[in-house]
Image 1 (cartoon, rainbow, N blue to C red):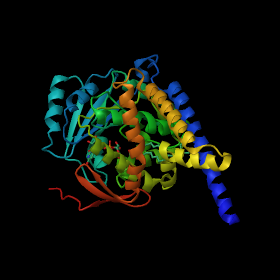
Image 2 (cartoon, rainbow, N blue to C red):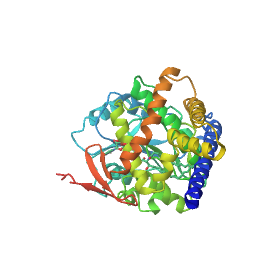
Image 3 (cartoon, protein in one colour):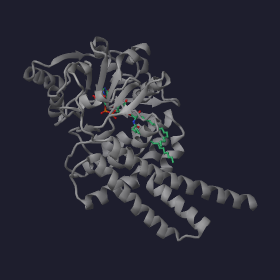
Length: 397
Ligand SMILES: CCCCCCCC/C=C\CCCCCCCC(=O)N[C@@H](CO)[C@H](O)/C=C/CCCCCCCCCCCCC
Ligand SMILES: O=c1ccn([C@@H]2O[C@H](COP(=O)(O)OP(=O)(O)O[C@H]3OC[C@@H](O)[C@H](O)[C@H]3O)[C@@H](O)[C@H]2O)c(=O)[nH]1
């Protein structure tokens, strides 16, 4: 009996301390976000201070926004860069889009690589490998198909590349788009994910997401090139992990990554979140406990129970106040990340936020109990540690 009482009190203290720590994370994210994001992009004294950058654009299929997203790479204000388009399938409709843009902007240095190679399991690495080998500059920017750049985004990223920094990445966020799915995506990236991303970056914890990331090529070369990471689906996490082990720093840039895919629906976004959660679970198994506990609805319920046991506080009142204050912190953080007016009103935010908060733990549970992953047109099985194996690999002619 005594053991049971001690255990109950032990759990209650653990939940209450975890709950307090989550408020600390909220505060760190808000202050760090305000300090770090959306700073004016400074000009270095001379143009020569800006190194050349080889930009790898892995493409697969088109969407209604692809042409305008890609066009932003042709109109960047940056001294020396080359655009290396990578397409695996020679019948891919994105090829026409690229050639039209190349015709429109003949002064921009571009190359097109069709066919990919087979250096590992990760199809994005396979797609980019030939372009990586042909890249001529000392810095590599890997940029996913749905990313939009401002004129000064590349300059902003390079400005954050200090002597000790090996990787500068953009914190994932989204462009303004219409509809509930777009609201849901913006709320997810601007609240739950930004909170962890900003805290992780401020504490120098590896949170590198590879959708828009600038790297030193010499370090990649020392590690054997991008093909070294082809055995992982989450190549981004392992690249940053290895850079850090070699003594390099990673940093986020001041502008977040503006994702602007023309395909925006709740189901495919949830499939993407579940895929990412599966990757995190196999790479860092501690998240099986940490992630659900860091969710508003879950930690709120645990802390309400703990507070009623430890301090005899009314649990329902505690829970409702907890949700309200969490909601307000998220609104503040989202406003900081957006840095301007939001494309939806407060009612849309309430609905989108409640949907995100209630569905988050459910999606995570789905991810834990299934180690198979579908990414675009391929399926994989994940093993502990993060290595992946393709299920029924497609035969390439
Ligand atoms: C009181 C402590 C609470 C700690 C809660 C920890 C919850 C950790 C959750 C997320 C960490 C940030 C993840 C951001 C990236 C998410 C997107 C993603 O999954 N991208 C993958 C695909 O591109 C990519 O491969 C993943 C990269 C990062 C993986 C990070 C693993 C989690 C590390 C957790 C360590 C604790 C962090 C504590 C920070 C306060
Ligand atoms: O089979 C594929 C799949 C994807 N890709 C390319 O890889 C990029 C990212 O693909 P998606 O948008 O489907 O996927 P995500 O946004 O979820 O990717 C993210 O998660 C997994 C990590 O490995 C990636 O680095 C990260 O960008 C795109 O540019 C896409 O064209 C391929 O080239 N081949």
